[in-house]
Length: 181
Image (cartoon, rainbow, N blue to C red; front, side, top):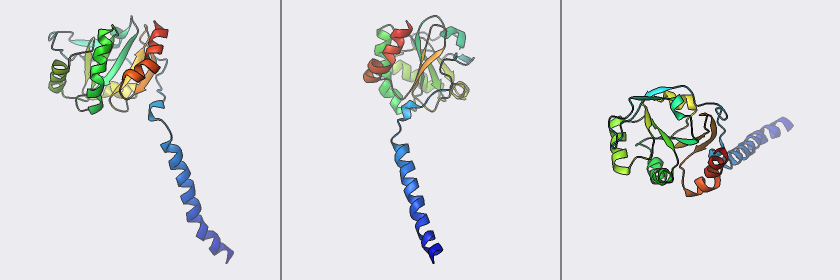
């Protein structure tokens, strides 16, 4: 008889444990996901550069060595990403302030990306096309947008998941950039 009562409470116990685990999971901030590449150089790559409207010939290809020399941002974006569209205007404002931003056009259509830059302006020094997502995979990209802060040696010092906006820039990214200057 005691065994039967015990088994009646097992589902209740399992339910209580699941509630605690779900509550804990929902309280986590997804932007706090650490990057395995923090304090490591940007992975080696050589990818075609997306021709920009203001410079249609531009670079034929770019590689990781070209990210060295100045503190900069590396922004993962795509035309299919609605949050990227919201972020884009602020990236243009950062460019106007002299912030260097390199782009990774992630798993996107090149023609769509060129139209996007023509329509919304180009905040990037250059943007490589990562059509197959290999560079994104090597960077540990979860999705677009994501932004990495690079030091003068091309080492990743910070990763931000989500859009860069005034609040994120002022409270988080700008202090890191200023410290690295």
